[in-house]
Image (cartoon, rainbow, N blue to C red; front, side):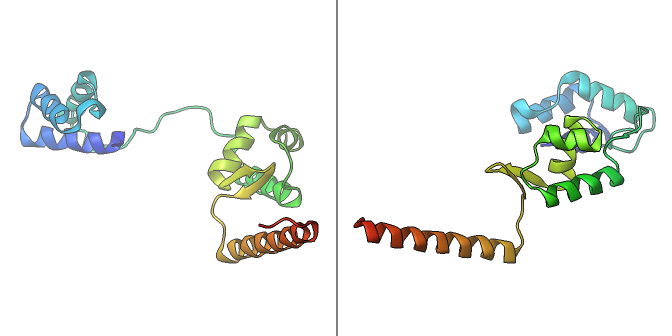
Length: 154
């Protein structure tokens, strides 16, 4: 389970009137080793006693994200579409951001992965899948013809 789901369960125990020990015991009984620790349950109980009703993460102040912005995402996308064999280092040098930011853009925002030294979308459209199937079948047919000419069988 995810943190947020456990927080909801902790809130449920709080609203049911259980104390922290009972809540922790209930979580351990039902979720075993994946249950949150005792200090987590105590901290969330304290927050709920102070009047907190939201189980989401609180906003944390910090440095704004300067590298992973829509302009950089579009720029990286254009580069990858122009040359799918670009390396992370090359993209980072062209766009002037870190390799980690380029990796985040490619994986999280563009849903791409490296496959046979090419950046490809994780989920292909139906026509892209059909094109790959057709290409594979034509390659197999050509290879079969070559093998037959040499006297080999498939």
